[in-house]
Length: 68
Image (cartoon, rainbow, N blue to C red; front, side, top):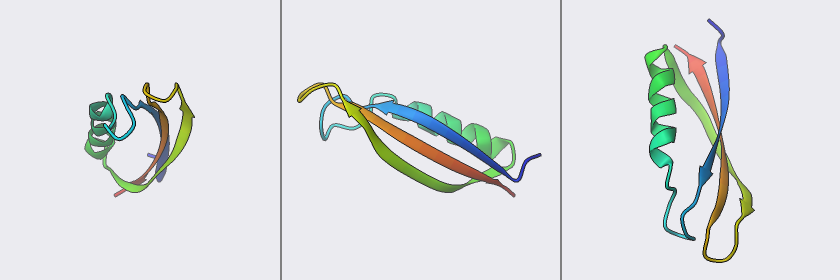
């Protein structure tokens, strides 16, 4: 088993300030890695571009998991 696993997830934002419509996907990914014996070590995010003023944008999330 590797000591670290790095995953990148793209979250689509519904509207500015309203959160992500696929946030449950992020939760599933975290829980899957935890069930494999990893813990979340680091999480970072970056703006992945906008679809316009009212359509929201994309958020790039990088997750680093460490084996326990």
